[in-house]
Length: 319
Image 1 (cartoon, helix red, strand yellow):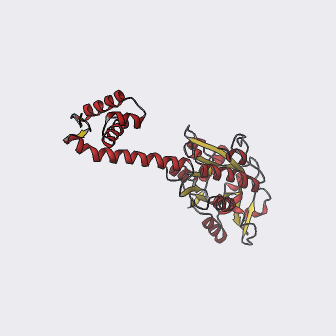
Image 2: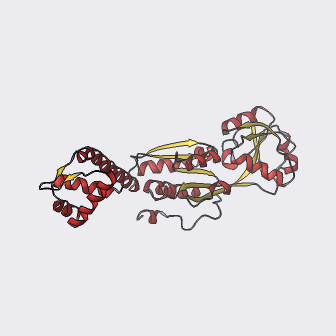
Image 3: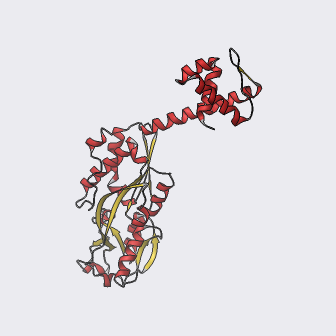
């Protein structure tokens, strides 16, 4: 059954005649009559006494409150979607990797709050794989993650590179590897490491890089927060391979040392991801544009492959 049949029924009831209902709907009287007949066939009973003014049958009286409720709900649904498309939403949910949220994201959040004070931001730190899952499940609007082509493929996703950064070695200040200016991978692989838990993209990135060189990953301890990595490495003899942005606070710590590796260098690329339907929403588009501008400005080396068609501020202002 089509919704317009119920609306035609309501129009006839409210106006008291087929002719008046036709004028109200912008249709011919015969078109309204056909719609009422189709509705009566659908419910299996006559709904109106064809007299002047039109009167409801018993079946029509039973249908009337349901028809009103259905049409009202449909109108509310349409209005809700219109408001959503116009950017009239109450919150924006973001999931992202810990290091980006801690260091690069705050200026973006601050500027967004100035421009959209009525939108409440909800930010959750998650591993990349988990952040992409909650995006696909509709629990967040934007994911800021390490690139994983296996998980970011799909016509429903919009993916934009943000920046690329090197992976470096965090160690205690007195660790034997601290004597190297650049640590050879073969030597590094001899030492036990604190690693990210399974399901974190960094764990896969490091493991795959070592495997390509025929080297093992000696995982001695699994962690999932940057503070935990720093604390564990500071107090023991474990090392950790971490992205450069996660090591910003470590360089000034007298109990820690940070070293680059010898080639082949390992890097990670950070991307922002949303869904194609969310990409149409003005606040979400503006957040993505701000992230592209402000985070790239803070990085020495922006990501290669950044889309030249990613909206600029001028373009977003007219979309």
